[in-house]
Image 1 (cartoon, rainbow, N blue to C red):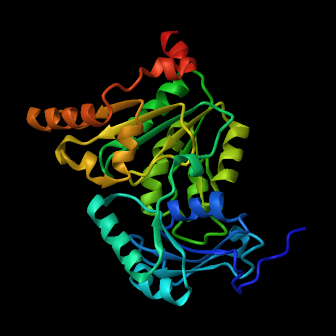
Image 2 (image 1 turned 90 degrees about the horizontal axis):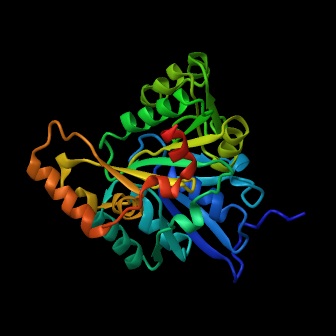
Length: 319
């Protein structure tokens, strides 16, 4: 049985900080660092989400190498933390950030003496035993939720047992929110869901579709797979999926033409897209639509047809 790692530094241990916003950061830790004795995560830093700093990632989720959990500090303390803990790597793990801001952050890390890194799909996407459709976007507010809800309804009407996995919003008790399942309005009440969570979850619940979310997405996915035959990843905050998709749909907002290639990781989503959807065309100008179409062709000129990537869905559609 593996012994809990000591807080003292071993010569072969890489010391890391994960920068986040109570979502991607926790997922990256769980799948890459939690069971890796060669790395020691000394801290998370928090941005975007009020009230998350000055808490701890609990030992229940952090695993046996972290019996005291992991402290979460305000991002403003980043440089001091790098120097104090003699950090080797800082991993940037949150989304909807301008490219230039990502590089300003990298410069802060480099100037403090550490290396700056990003973790990509190969190391962070979980593999599902079910077919997976993901709906993501190049920016928050692009109009992704109506698309996700339409697909969920379409699948349900054709008899597919569908589970929705939502991008995390763990703003409360992290241990209690490790795995969340919302099948009825009462589940939302029991979980003390926030207004933001209700806004995202209730449309599916009203359709009779169960929504899963939480902190530990390996466990979240396992529970969803036990109850469904199709997984729909409803992405948030323009992040790329935690689950490897068979069909990756990306929504582009013409009202913010130019943002599709200037935000992280929205551009990553666009470059990975199997299919894209330009939203809000009824209120955007033709010039704006043409601008985003041109940008899409430049970075992803030939997304494959979805029926070639996902033949089970094409069969259902044809029927």
